[in-house]
Amino acid sequence: MNPKLHGIAEIRTFFRTNTQPIYFFGPTAFNLLGIDRWVRNFQYVVYYDSWDGAHPRVFAPKNQPYVEFESSEQINNYLLRDPEVRTHLQRRGGTPMIVMVFFDEETEEICRELGYELIMPSDELRRRLDSKIVTTQLGNEAGAPSVPNVIGTASSWKELEELAALNELGRDLVVQTPYGDSGKTTFFIAGTKDWEKYAEDIVGEQLKVMKRIDNKAAAVEACITRHGTIVGPFMTDLTGYPELTPYKGGWCGNDLFPEALPPVQRALAIDHVQRLGDRLAREGYRGFLEIDVLVDLATDEVYLGELNPRISGASSMTNVTAGAYADVPLFLFHLLEFMDADYVVDVTEINDRWRDLAAVDVWAQLIMKEPADRVERILQAPRTGTWHLDEDGRFEFVGVSNDWHDVTHEDEAFFLRVYGPGDYRFKGADLGILVTKGRMQNAEGLTRRSRLYIAGIRSQYVSETLPEPPALVPIGYVK
Image (tube, rainbow, N blue to C red; front, side):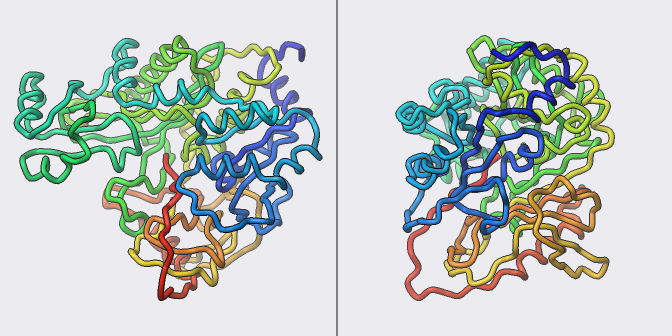
């Protein structure tokens, strides 16, 4: 048993001298890239090596026979069973601790068989809490309200209309099914035509039926610890831009900046997140999670949105903030909850300090999918590393770099390549992620600089059309 850690300074020392091997498993190293700067013996085990062997703490098996993966869970389970991966972990010694974004019961069983420790809340608990219905119910119990809604079922537009009328929700509705990415399981329905368009996805499901409001959405990550819930910085989403995603409601990036929420709404949102976090702790949940909040622009009311009980696509932003560098990245509190460490921190003090430091943070990321409905083989792709954008829009590669933590100006960016030469470019394919300072979105939409970055990355791809393209399924980065 390690000695008790008193405060942030001793926590930093604990991780800088860590001897416990910890691994992030994923299609790429994206979600927790840069944590190896803070945690000794932290490595990434991936299927797509974005650095082609140049990153000293990224490992990918060399023997990769063609497999038609349909999910990130399948990739992670494949990696856990891969002989090269198992040999690599054995060579480094110790009992591996494993973290990942997506996993399932099979993942848990593989880890038990191999003697690995999966340091995440259980799949059973996460699946239950991932339901939009359950999130709403727990939030209500905790005093963190959702947009006015009713839970129920409907087999016709008439039934849905009557359900909404009984609960004074109006006729312009937002309907959600319990599970799935919000871009694909959220439906805007105001009449018979809308109902007929989405009925196949709605009938037979338990529904969350909400009043449609004009809202501003913000995302935040938090960590439920034994001392309370630590709340990270708020950021806005980029969604549905056709230059970045083929999905109308699809997540395609984030802006992290001080005005993401005004001070009053920020305070209310933090309170909602802490209330929900405390309620989830009673369910047995601990560690990292992501929460969406909605601000009604007509009333300034702050509502709880969706819950993602996992590491998320916004983690890249959370872990490079001023708060992270003043103390430690938020994810390290997740590690403390699962490691053999006793520690004492003042959660209120951390939350207050991080709220004040949020006034200096400006970061952005673009999640770049292939929007075109075609299949081509990639012949040439942009390299992973630092890129420079000049005033005339010229986009040039500066050099290989391990992560985006050294990006300091709006005219430089880090690009993480996902699919490279030999891979396929198809509708929804994950091409890569670009991280930079500054904002990518304003009231009018994508900024000029954002569009230059998108054009610059796309100009680096060269691909060829296939006469008989294979059937392909996007793995999908989701928030």
